[in-house]
Amino acid sequence: AAFKAAWSGRQVTVLCPTTILADQHFQTFQERLKNFPLRLGVLSRFESKKKQRETIAKMAEGKIDVVIGTHRLLSKDVVFKNLGLLIIDEEQKFGVRQKEKLKKFRNEIDILSLSATPIPRTLQFSLFGLRSLSLISTPPPGRRQIETKILPYSKETIKKAIEEELNRKGQIYFLHNRVETIGKAARNLKQLVPKAKIAVAHGKMSEEELRQAMNDFRQNKFNVLAATTIIENGLDLPQVNTLIVTNCARLGLAQSYQIRGRIGRSHKKAYAYFFYGEQKLEGKALMRLEALKRAEALGSGYRLAEADLEIRGAGNILGKQQSGNINQIGLNLYCHILNEAVEQIKQISENIK
Image (cartoon, rainbow, N blue to C red; front, side, top):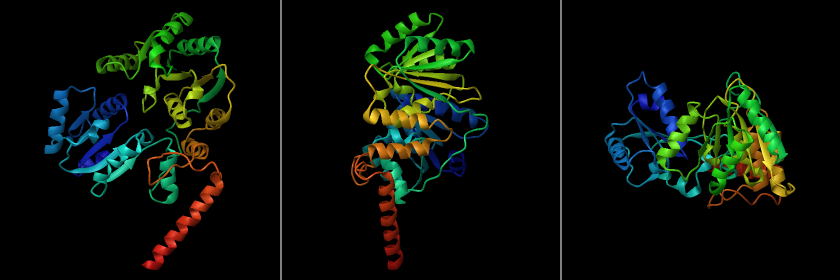
């Protein structure tokens, strides 16, 4: 879609939720479009202030065909000369207020939103018929189902999982979602598995430190990446096929699914370990993890989004809530009532015509 729009003379912008994802997309676009006379740009905190000003000026002059960036693209000083297509990657990571800023484009351009796990409010838009929905239910050739294990915390299991992955020359994501203690967690992991070469990545690192850590891991200088949920969105590293998550009960359902999707991106068998603490799993935390376990099959994102809708509720399409208001009646009855209401509105519209 981006190529067709840019080749026809319109500008394209790709909006990403994180600098890491924006940087990865920029590298991918550079590689895939290197044989075509299209001008690319990137706008994120990885770039210097001077470089950002130069990119914004070129966008306004129409000297950039495709620009990839983070929330910086939504700033008031960003102007396009001839924007034709906006692509929102990992749409579920953007809040209502951020999406409202996109309305200034809506009457003039095409918008393509991408998500493996649409949030309840977004899914409700599709159920209402207010937004068209396309499902990609078939995985790329050669992909295999990720084996998911939900277990009480165990150092021995973690040690065994890491050693097995290292023995097959692979890499590991170790997710510890607390910036304050991630350094200590990485040191403890090194003591547990001495042969592991561990890098650390989190959102409070400087731009240069974060970029260097990710590039070093991508180039296999390290075989374990201890990270926060900064790795959640869009990373595509086929050699990483084991995921270890600590304190998994604190994560949302869609978030857990997205994180699991960072592995299993090649023909190799992948393994995801979700560890919970000493407290017994119950309530919504238990429901989320049970739904995650059921969604092991490839292409389960839409079914998981439906489960998330039932657990969290649909939210408010006219307000800022992105979840809520459905648990009193259940998903099936809710959808039945919703379909009847949509059909009535369509019938009224036809009669008016």
